[in-house]
Length: 378
Ligand SMILES: Nc1ncnc2c1ncn2[C@@H]1O[C@H](COP(=O)(O)OP(=O)(O)OP(=O)(O)O)[C@@H](O)[C@H]1O
Ligand SMILES: [Mg+2]
Image (cartoon, rainbow, N blue to C red; front, side):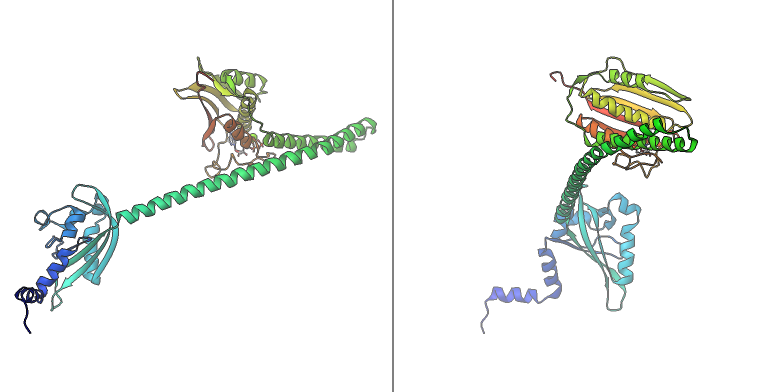
């Protein structure tokens, strides 16, 4: 059989295993494939390694492979550890952030294999690295989107639940008003006609007190259910705080301090609703100081916001409760309903405000309300 000289020459060359292997490795550009000596210094380098890591063969040969690892992996001793595992077990796989020559990071999948000679002596390591940055980014973006979607769904469920609860509370309290009124009137009648019997009068007093409590609950439920669309006009928060504090019956042992900022900008709110919200915050603050203390109501402003702070030196809020206190029906009080702060939050949000809280158990709490400044033309 006659063979053409060129193909004869190349097939002869390809029969040389070493050359064939080198050609194979040199043709790979999607994987960094290279050898390390037993110490971890780079011995060979392929075009894939150059493409992924950014070093040329002549500048990286002889350098220790730990230069591919970021600071935190070096501190953890990862490069040496991976070689130890590969030497002990024959092979080691790892995934993590690695550094390119220009300092940028890429997400790498790495397989390190121990290379031994016929006598079983360790001669070095082969290392194959894949750049998985893109799939990783795509996965991260997907996870981020999923999280955002879940949060939106949760918010929706919460809002729906609140709306239903509001309707239910509104309907129920309306229905309860009438029978409570009847009980109250009947108790009043009995008080008039009953002889001066000590025990009977005591029980009447109990009935009247409990009716009063039930009425308080009904009012709170109605407040919660009936947060109406606010009539927002530029208003002065200082005036609202003053009006509210004037009405306040301050318990013995409590000192009230008002620190109202001068030149406080106006905010576009429904002042009736905001007075109600401030009132609930003050009531909570006073209830938190059964042994007395200081209630401070202050106003202040920044370039963007106008703020009201309500601070007490009371019992404080347990860290595990802080996230729950604005939820309807959450209460830690024996006679509480747990609607005060839920109403506050609804009222503030309807008026463009936000509320945050900081608290230290046994030292006190500070509720901070923030409204955006009314724009000139509002
Ligand atoms: N200033 C405060 N200091 C300490 N704890 C507070 C304060 N304000 C609120 N809390 C906590 O938050 C909970 C919820 O408050 P919220 O006003 O919503 O309900 P409540 O005061 O318990 O009952 P009510 O419906 O009568 O207001 C309280 O039970 C209390 O545990
Ligand atoms: Mg309350």
